[in-house]
Length: 93
Image (tube, rainbow, N blue to C red; front, side):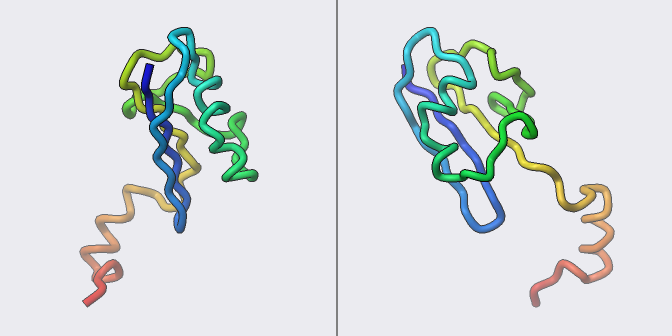
């Protein structure tokens, strides 16, 4: 079955479509994708994982078409972003 694996860093994003066996789990799909070799500092034990934006465990079974997402830590408080934009800190003009 075909699924996708996605991961993003500030300057490098990767979204891969791969073919996995029907019994694939989130972890086996991530390993098979090669993303851990492309991002050697990526430690799955310290990352949140999701399928289409919903949290998932590494042993979760996959369905055809699923998108496995590897999330990194938040570096800015999302609640303060609108305040910064209103104050003009986020303007590029």
